[in-house]
Amino acid sequence: MDVYFDNAATTKILPEAEEIMFKTLRENYANPSSATVIGLEADRIIKNSAVTIANFINAESSDIYFTSGGTESDNWAIFGTAKACRGKHIITTKTEHPAVNMPLEELKAQGFDIDKLDVDQNGYISIEELKSKIRKDTILVSIIFVNNETGVIQDIENIGKAIKDVNPLTFFHVDAVQGFGKHNIDVKKCRIALLSASGHKFGAPRGTGFLYVKNGINLKPIIFGGGQQKGKRAGTENVAGAASMAAAAEYCYKNIENNLINVQAIKDYISQRVLTDIEDTFVNGDINASPYVLNMGFRGVKSEVLLHALESERIFVSAGSACNSRKKIRSSVLLAMGKSDSDIDCSIRFSFSAFNTIKEAEYCVALLKNKVAFLRKFSNVR
Image (cartoon, rainbow, N blue to C red; front, side):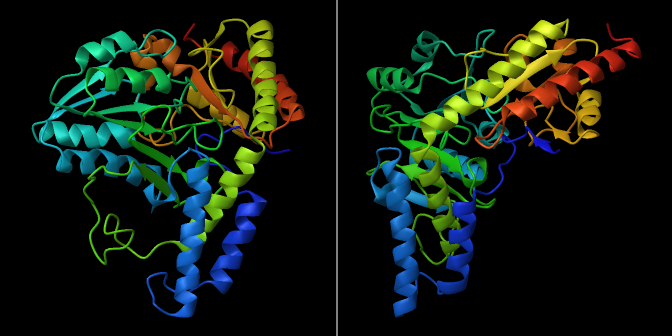
């Protein structure tokens, strides 16, 4: 059987999302900016999709902007804020995704002052350290909600409160790419100004995403052209993509509690059996983090070797962020958590969806026992 435990990289499209996507492609092919009847119908689909998505984060539909995915949304939140605000100080963490890190490095080269918060051994920031770093010229705090490598969930409600307590003018950006569709998010309660999400992480097609921009924020565009989406994000809207993403979100949030129970059982089974039955193993990050992600180390076995050994049996996992997997660099997330090079080099990530089963988990653990024991016989790492 095929066992797909790499859902943090991308998810299989949900049947509900696939159905509405192809229906919209066939029937609602007009340009949503067109003044024709069929163009207005396409525009109505865009607006209705925004309403659906906004409802799940307690936002206004007019504050939802459709993008090509999480990377564009993160880039827009960062560069758009930098262009709109006078200050040049931004705060982030040492465990962000490259879609946040790389734009901030670009701004640093342009003269911006970037502070990166430390994390503890479980991957959590210190809110007190955050408060101490906020200045009068701090324009943005950008913090990931659910870490893509470890599943660690930052306390965005108290983080949002802390930011506003120190500097009410500082914007709070949340990278919710691994959180939207899997965990509840309330942008008002958490005082979030900007929130990024990516459709292919929760059952919508690749190439879809959105950015929530709180009403009243003068976020500057980074894509120019025909003035679509209130002049903020030019380019003909992906009507089918928006409709598909809304359908996926609706499915995920309608079933959010059952999905959490299902994936928690799978994560618990794998972590407990591995820690009990395979010696010299460990969990990276808080074991009580998001049930959708489990990062574990197998001392004495290189992660890439174990990954391919499992792949040979049609079990698909990863050795960290999919965006870094071909660059042959060590995880900055695990480094920031104080992990040694040797522990990083033997760590792999399992990431789950609501469609994974305990039977798959049992099959995976059985093969892990066999593969790890076999590979350790030929390892000179230990």
